[in-house]
Length: 472
Image (cartoon, rainbow, N blue to C red):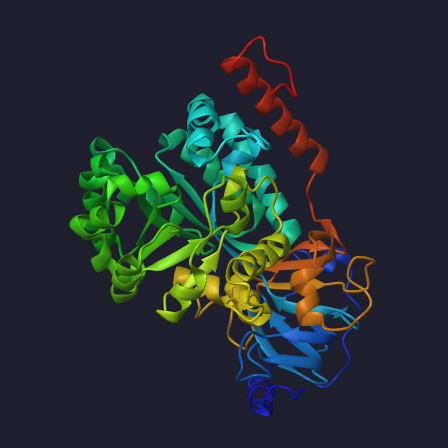
């Protein structure tokens, strides 16, 4: 493998980023958010940059190189980087790659993990999601989202889209508070009924815009009765310069609602890449052609789609038509946050359907979908999704020496087919260390779990006072 162009190293030298002495070893406190402004990750055995211009192969891989970041930004990648004022992290034997981008989730749903296990998506929505959603209070939603965010960090997610939709504003504020406290980069997807549309501008200005790690999207529905509200969201999205984020054809019976026609009549298809469609499983050839022409993007949640008997997305056809697709974990119907399982499921479903091992996505393609591809779906590819000078320092470090991963054979394939959250040793978001040596930093995990248990117990008793834990 070749190393990154020396052009970047010389730029860093000329601007004073790299000096000529040897840096000291870093400690846990030094790497934390209140530590030094520079971190030098030395001698990584493999860096997967996701940028073919920086290394070899489609993912721009580099062997035995260093990565230097200052505050929230990557400064340089190359061999023998020196920064005497930086904290040093020895990554010999480790794998570096960009943080994973989860383009579709519902973080409050961790409060009822395993719920409605024998139902498809329509039964799950009616029997579990709707009544529990209506029973949530501010304490419940904060506890559930806090638990989910820690689970995401553990698996290497650094950016998440949290689809909250029409929560009352007091619940939405508790949701955002948990997101902010996590340290994750996030996009909050939200809406209000027609009578509350005017409040969305103020909501975004007050709670989202001041946070450099936060983004905003508007949500809507694709049923016939939702068309007027969706049109309002489309108009507001144009004014606020944000995306509209909707669910589309997750269940085959939803075709009766003509959801693609609803998108067209509401003006949503005219949003182009500012339209994000979740699931999009039961598309016809004509639908795919229309969506490709519109420029809309898609969030694919393979684990959730299997869990809810929803079906298998036509991923190779979407790829052939140039439609950008990212990967999502999709909240409670995934029951856990495991990006590695999500990636190998995305690969496996298409291989099982086509009986062809070379179908889209391949190993390299699914790794890209989970990182840079997700960033492209969100319109954040200029900030995150790849490791390159000038990009935000969203970096994860994998330890491949674990029992489930070793021995080394083909590390790219092993990330997808062998990887587990336990292999994620370090997680940096915007240069801030959130996971170190396999442990979350600054988090009382037992307290977070206890709060989620209390929330689940309260909701369970409010819905069915006679129900006991574990009862189906």
